[in-house]
Image (cartoon, rainbow, N blue to C red; front, side):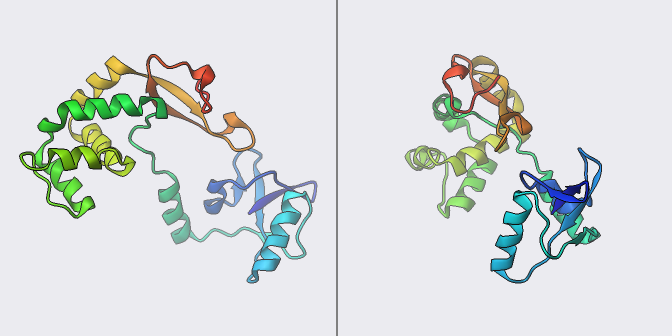
Length: 195
């Protein structure tokens, strides 16, 4: 999907939200699509649109309410908390310090994802090993954010600070989100450049 100005195609990129809209929210201009069944023609159409020209065939976007709702719900899922890479080691240290206090419901969740039976008594080394993987870190982070936020909040208050991270593709500030970073980190040296 793309939009046109002065009867000419114009688009420097494609937005995810355009999959569920028929108007560009920023410019209040109708969106168009270039339907194609052949991969070669699809690629040609994308190149034409990105260069500011219309494809041979294009049409106004009509919304499919069921598809729009399904995609919209997917696009609007926000992660519970984002941790910047500089906070990873401190987060792992914190997890290691509280590992013996992990509730059984959290251990069951980790067991399901790892296909291994994990309990507090026998499997602390295995649990420490699994927690080095970002998938299990995310499970634990989401668990504590939903169930024991006070414990997680104490860690974040002591070791982290909240920042805005910019992740835009062409223009960094087009896409921003909150994240927690290590309080002692210098963002000016970071490739992710928080403010």
